[in-house]
Image (cartoon, rainbow, N blue to C red):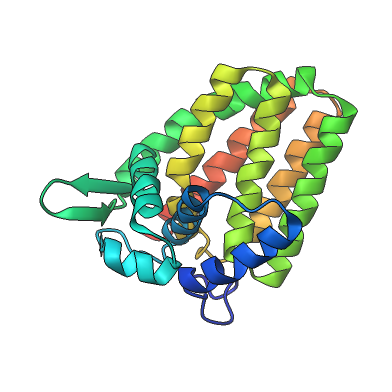
Length: 238
């Protein structure tokens, strides 16, 4: 776990499950148990709390998350569709292994699709949309300052989702959603590269600047540089 982000042990998923539900009920917007199980497991997987190659026991997950078998099984099948776990007949559920070669293939596809997305967003985004993207980047910076890995990763995903929404191409947005889901665990690894988060913050600023100027070429170049920076941080770990 990157030392610059974590200065104390991360709470177990059970702690989050038991504390999140009452707060949500108080707001009147409690998520379903299926959604709770999915989000808690996804957070644990993408932040590498569950290690690649580790087998997950349903009974243990029920105890950790304080949720029933049905929502956990539902969540595991969703996560299998996203490539985060593998359901192996007669053996159980295994956290999908990580391969740098897989990451490099993902990055190749992301460079092409993220560049197109940024180009479209720069041409079509409104001032209000750019302000929303800027606000997400500000919250990202605040999460970095708090050393909250889960929030940092979640806000980076939201940052890219807002750009995809501004591009107004639903097919492209769906492709990118899958690519981002498969990339998050690799990003958790890349955060260990010294200075990488500061680079990400500067890259976000460059992307926002290009979108604000409605400059498709600059936006595409800035996003592609952002993705390739992720590649360099991963290769630094080899």
